[in-house]
Image (cartoon, rainbow, N blue to C red; front, side, top):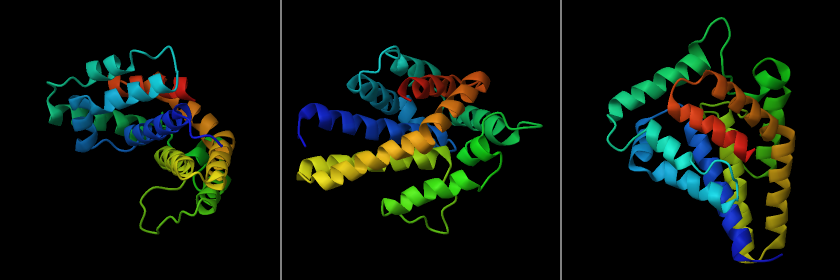
Length: 212
């Protein structure tokens, strides 16, 4: 195991990008809008993409800032994002345009094998989902936050010189990506790119496609 700056930088960048995407794919709130308009969210996304050497999306910051400029009316922007998110993910008829649950893509219905499969990985990582938690385990934002958590565990292991922690965190990342998140995220990105009206969600779809 090595403690090289490049490995640390890559793990930190992945953790940050997973966390940003999780925030983007949760129901929009005032904190997201503020982070977008101050430039914090666009800057963090672009820095992560640059650190990971993901080319072809060098304009991510500019696209996000164009969709959510610093002088934007925060309340109006939040309403725009809420309307687009609700239309795509909840209210579209006869079928939703963008499903946010892995089990719907894999088994065609909620709370099926994919739900329990990803929940087992959370359990293996030492995480317990509280009964009061409002999102199913296979919601895209939850899976993304799980990957961010695993990247932070990898960072902790590297800094502590603990190869067992690093190896296990990397193993779980690989299993989560291969068995669950990568095909799921690409399907969400494809549908988001097709149907999003808001520039923010169009940019998120491009970033997800490049990342995964």
